[in-house]
Length: 382
Image (cartoon, rainbow, N blue to C red; front, side, top):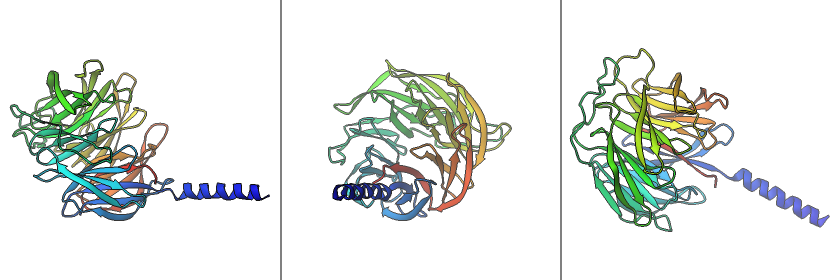
């Protein structure tokens, strides 16, 4: 009996520990409506966000990413003097700053980690530079091991592929790096420059953190003035989808996995058929199985839903109102059951359930109030 009783107590303790495990969501924001980085608790069953807590007050802390184990957050202050903070996530969800380093430029607008987590990649919009920052064993950051300055003639002022009546024109006045990331193998690095209408291609030496321009070192955008913004790789790592901000178009690129170079494929509109006027495409997210693609359209305030065929062909399925204004980014939860929209100008986050069969989105009547949300990420349960 005592042995059985002890086993029962141990089992109950394990169950209690599992039930108490809490997943966190982290939301970065813009000043003045947003005051920094907020932590939320996540309901595992409903995806609801609760217990909003301001945990870091870095100015314009609009960009962030996290280590795979969820133990370290990296936050960029999107200010002219770019700063990146490395923050340890404690068991209770509080943050302890490890250190701060320069972003290697001005106005950092995107952060990503290499697949092995050894380097942090930074795109600096204002200066048009990219940087590689080494990640130390304790999660803190070293000074940049490499920086690159985009150079060239600005792209066309007016996007030729935009819909009729569009005045979606911004920053074709010089280099403006907008995103940087590696392919799934971690061997190749790609960065977009909205101002120059280019996608840069590099090889990465993971030991030294140095970049070598590929051959060719860049390719031009799918159309003049398109404004290449963000991209997502296919699960197989043999291609990517890129959203063009000013033309509001999606372009599929095939990746030569041996050479690390991209070849442009088909381009389609991210806006509904028949739409006329101005809109700026923003974030995009691909489902974990690679079959559903979602795109945020700012001004039109919609999420465009596409299904992806085996050969990369897109089929437009729906346009869903975000129930907010100026959706900047979209985030899928770790199970792909819920999609979240960061509505920057309406100061809220909206949530949609994702149908497992066809990826259809259904709005959940639950608004989360947060000033000027920019990005949302999840870390594993603690």
